Length: 142
Length: 175
Image 1 (cartoon, one colour):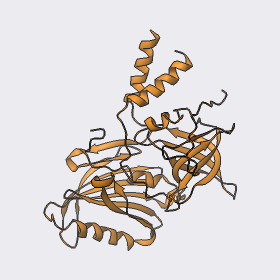
Image 2: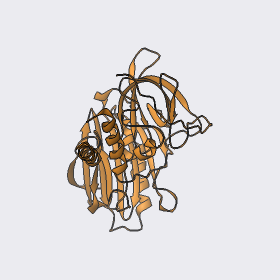
Image 3: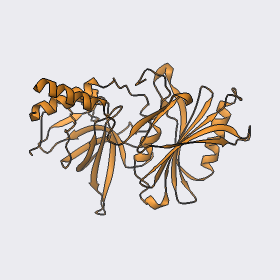
Image 4: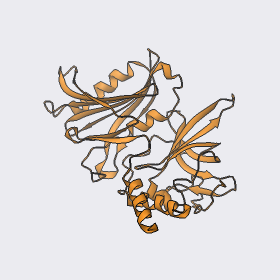
């Protein structure tokens, strides 16, 4: 099977799964601001009901800690240019997110900016007030 | 042949579970929630100032020094006392240590909203617990994620992932 077929199969799998609608409010996130951090993709869980992006981020003390960001449903994200391998493990990215109110390391995933400057955004916009949503066609080199 | 392979692969992926976290449905308890590993179910009892030895179920799992625990308390013998049971449980939690955070989350939206309360507490035993409590249809639900002292890193966001996956089927989603 070609890589293209694998990619199509992945997207189809997401679309074949039951429709997922957010069943909880996003009150746990601070909706008043969007924060940006840069790090390396550790894992991207493209799962229902919500996708999770785990990123290794180096803090000001030089320690590498994992941050976890909650995104929309896979079916929503696919329509916005995201894919199971997009972002990809090992990629250096900048994450835009609305932080957790309780201070833990994570938040509501609003955007991911790739090394080439391209950005994919959440189903609730990019978090920067622009509302710009750019279909993601960027793929890292093997 | 390629089309057949494509469809088979797509169906396999689509039918597969989440990479780690999976939802466990307890329809007899009117609840579903995700765990990172398979939980154990235990029959238990729950004591309140209002009633002793209320029947309850506890679903619990430990992963990476974090205990994920859902307690379901049957309140059918006290149908008008739900708010008191919920607030009593929250009151107990806040007395366990230093309250770092309080919130009033909801499951579902608009007219279907089920509101609850969440607390993050640094306990005197060195653990940190994030609990979300809901009263719904004659039951008290307490979803705890307890970061044990051995975990060290208490600011991990995984505990908040746990309680927010709770839902109350049948609700038209994945049922």
